[in-house]
Length: 574
Image 1 (cartoon, one colour):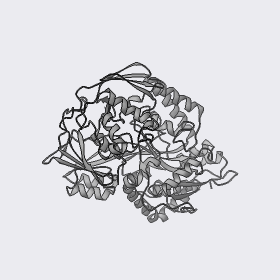
Image 2: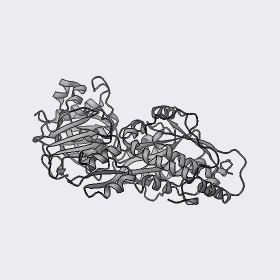
Image 3: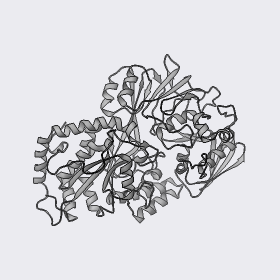
């Protein structure tokens, strides 16, 4: 804990109340998390919010406890800053967010006050905030966005291209749009990489967000669990896992419920964790993000918009049917159709773009045509699992969700979406990807996925032996588990960015947006909140993903520079 100028800023000067916005529900966070979704697709309540909310509450107590020292430090800071003040008004700014980001925003508001900004925090019910952000009524709002492909295609592009589906900062720069399109239209990685780097240089200067951070993915398991490795996309693959002294493995999920057991009917990573143990796809991904064959034996790309996949022979679905090209074609056509799921569109359609058509060449060969070249297409295919055509046509999407039949390592036994899902080993499993040994049937006989949204409940269950693997360990509890000889903790890079989007129509001067970035001591704040498990980003791309520009460094904490920029933009800072 540090005080004074280098510590967290404290509540002095102008007030920082909630304002008159709609109050949060009292539950940290709110909506479900979906791969590649604004926190409107995020399960930041039952999942991330519960753990983070407790940590953030500690910070609020911290802020209140240190008010005296902080006010002194803040006055000293202002007295030693830029001399004089420009003509104009004080910048007034409301920071909006859901309950799970409140304490973080309260501390940020204090940093902004120290450079002369009249900052307030308003807490919203999450869905209401989403709707207001979409309408453009908010100035600055805390949000997050995840990547399913480890590329800018589903992270920076939808958030920052003109008119993008997640662009609620209303940012528009024709040169950035051109560079995004150039990167998307080539299969030459060097060209795409250079285009993304140039786009990041522009974004850094335009500062459409207060650029934030990503969190480590922290998971834990019993010391009896062997061959367990968390993946960056939060997936838990149980095919390889062994359990010393037992054959029933219990996983404590961070979710309060999953959405479906139909692999075409969800956009949610917790749901995907279960689904990808029941179903396999044409390709899969190694824990470090490399795409490798799975149901596909091989593929070739005869031209920039065509892929031809050869399928493995002898693969069986859990109902005994052989998997052939007909099932692959049906799987993708069902997702592409506007009414493919019992008359409704599939929420997975965006994850197969720019796929245009799928054609059967023979029983074990399919051809896919793209509308345009896509360097990320294979990464996108990782998230589509193959279903049995005849069975789905018989039972429909609702029936598939209730009694799923896949070709993965485990078959469905029983369960409910909001309770637990019980699976058992499929002994006729073809073995999985040869690039991910061991190949063959799963090691454990039975798997139970149990919904456990409260972090404290998951941790207690792990330590008393009720469960064997848990998701999302809060950073402040990592040390507790690391000191337990019966527990192993593993950390991998997360794939979700946390930031504050700035409405670039209301905050049109880039100097103001740059000033906001310079005004916040993120390093100190994140250390207090996440104990070394949060990492700054310079713009809108992940260090673990394709296209990241390592030469760009996050905005430094420089309150004098922030004041200078605000003065240049015509605002008072004293």
